[in-house]
Image (tube, rainbow, N blue to C red; front, side):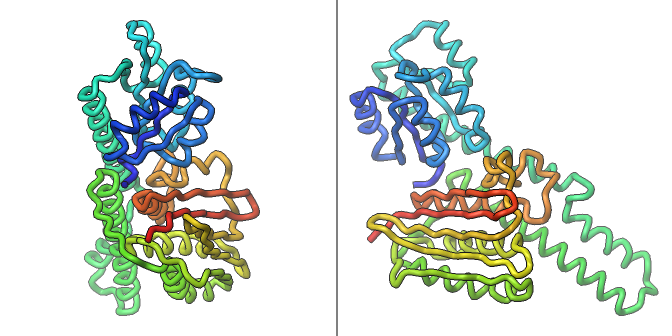
Length: 354
């Protein structure tokens, strides 16, 4: 199921969890946590679109859990519905103050619960798409960042300088082509990401060997790596067949390898390691680049990668945002670990499916 179908159930009573799993399990991807502390850990890897959060739990209660969840950048669009047998207005208001989007009482009314789940999942998707549109507009309206400047500037010079010699004209045409290509890539990535966020992206998994996909992409990036004197070391199993949407997974591997080569220093090394256990495939891509500051890591998979998209270079962070959506659509996870001055590792887990 896609990322927008993920629901985290937080409740310390197994019977309550069983009831919610019976109601929602056929239509959504579910994860559970029995405490607020566990919810904070699970939420950061599972990245739910919606959290059904009990109030009375051992350890930190639902109110504090809600406040802490709201402080996590990766969950800024996640919807939180607090669940409790308490129905007093004061308790509802306290939940809203903690950052909850809504409140539902136990025992559940089946129709109300399902309706609220559908509404908030749809609302999350709409908010994410709106945020993406706002970021794109901010980028295109910012003087130093807009790829349109690379088109309009050379065009104006070509129009105003008819006597320009052929070599200079050719140079400006090359600039125009590069800028137009960059703008087209931005447009394509924004459309792709919008489709995923809106739950409209088609994922067509079929039997595919992830090792073959990795080999293909390594071959494609090898000339660029060689030109930068970057070595790529690859470790692959004999067989890594599962069900994948091949073009989409190629895009994911390309994003990780392209990023690793781009940030690597001359004479640096990129390590690509694919392994499997009984239930999952694990792909790790490690570079020896400058690494990332700890405060940046929560934003790595966000569109435009930082809270302020105007600070971006031409990558815009969209490739990693798309990669996360693709991996989650395959019911997998993608993680990042990084140390300043030492490098970065991206890790993908996808299930082994016959």
